[in-house]
Image (cartoon, rainbow, N blue to C red):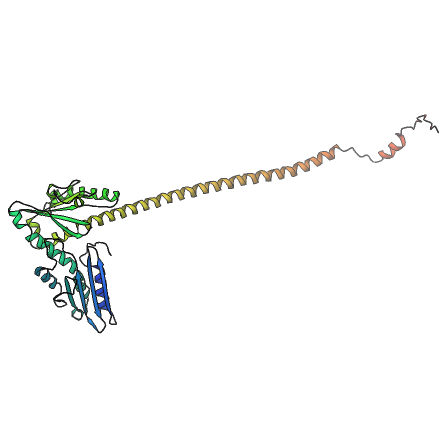
Length: 366
């Protein structure tokens, strides 16, 4: 399964067809490819005949009850017009499919244009959907419109994203119920709708279809099923006049209607990604500032420690020097406190300064 894509060509189908066309050796392929909206592709190619490939398509009608399950002659003619020399419609189609195409790969030129041709073949689903919507705009409710009865037409391009068309004599009203999963998505989408309405009402964009957004269903959808009107993103409305469906404008209008819901989701996703990138960049700048502050603080702390160590070292060095000097000075003072030595004074003292010996008068008693 892949998400809805605004591109007309199916990326998965385009990749498989390119693989078949550019293969150096014959390939045996029997592949089923499923995409959104219950769309199924069946691609077949035999190694015995590598120049031929068969593509079968199964898809529900865009509008149940109005369009037949089989493709109309106008739709088939539009499919034939993709690449007349390459695409051939097999009648009847393979069982279980609305359309089967025979692809003559040997008719695709071996030059730079082969990529473009394969891309056009991969857009067959978009061609069918556009043709069905054109038929609805041309033919549906014509009798009711003349009688003043404008019944909403429910179109299902994606199973969870239906939209409505109301055909009136001078205009066509397209209403898109918006359903989003997260509250943040609703906030972004609501802001986008308000800006779109403001821009669409300006003189610069006077030629585009007028648009409007409302949190409640428009009166034209009164009586529709409750599950189709239960939304959290409101209802977006386009007023399409006759000049918007004339000539080449018809294709652009039809494709824009089919992919409006997809474009809204793409805008919401891109906006969230932009906000996250800005927040991440802001966070990185804040972290860088914090790292720079921590580096400066660490540098200051280191300088302070070096200063304290140097100061302590100087103090200890001074103490050692003072201790050494004080020891030298102390020894000198001690030497000054010793008695003076006079040559011959010792013999003089022994001879003339001797103290007489006195008897203590003690007699030992036995």
